[in-house]
Length: 450
Ligand SMILES: [Zn+2]
Image (cartoon, rainbow, N blue to C red; front, side, top):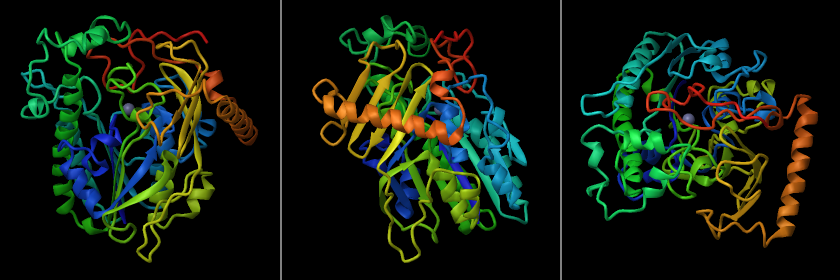
């Protein structure tokens, strides 16, 4: 069995058709979902990019792998094996079209990098640059006489949202600079961490619906480019025995909590990401898999499908396989809660359960939000009503659980607590050329004092 792992950076679940979104952002992904399984409640417990992908590729949490910040000094310990390293040791040919570098390069026979193409209109044709690398990677895979694992990493829904034509006006037809608009004025003029960056790539914008629409346009552009990769897959030998995975490392805040167009804050906008799985033998067709699933489940799922389930325990992975039983019944994920962290722009940690989200701030943070936030996700899925003040018993319960969980994991791992030991790495974004991709320490980013 082959594995094609497609990650679209910064992609929130609720802006895809297969997760109920109205505008037609994702016909190609929806088609894969229609033939396979949509994991309804898939959560990125550790955001943003570096901790997200490390958790995905190791099946382990931040206490184990210690990668909790973005672009920090710490490297992944050599003793912790990543998914491509494990698959390669079992005879897989492994290849990636990616630019994360560092420990994300480990375990690949071919690691094809890319850089962004700009077109004369100022649009960024990121997905096409990724596809050029992806086609080389898939051609190498097709030359092998053994199973292959290919990882393709798109970046289009990440700022700056500068989609090429015809996507650029697909979801917005007005004039974003019309003085009658006022909804974007605050973020464009009074948001020191980002306002200069925003003014670089959407100068004069006064309507917050414009960048919202451009985020969707980037998804649609990426989805179209993805269809070319899947057409290429169809021509390859063994295509029918390929597990296709579509997912992301974290989502994106648009304008829900005045943390505009970035991926900090432990809200569902950032934590709820897509997971679409397709293989005719291992997943039900057209089903939605309920239950709380997390990044740590991805590597166990792939290893289980590759008949390498002993590697899950051997590598101390904390996730579970999401494969459906052979009887053709769509299984449920039976997890009650997950520990969540952010340590890039702010220091926060907490718990996400099926019903509640609780988190506490451990640092004097960027947005002056309260120290404790508690949301009832059933009554308030948009997380607009912080009920921490009027639910002291629940806050106490979650704080106790949090302290117990941290103490337990520290005892189990014998390592330091990464959120206490490591500093936040991001305090402001630079210009459009250094802010993307976000896989490097941003130029001029200060290391904050803890
Ligand atoms: Zn990312």
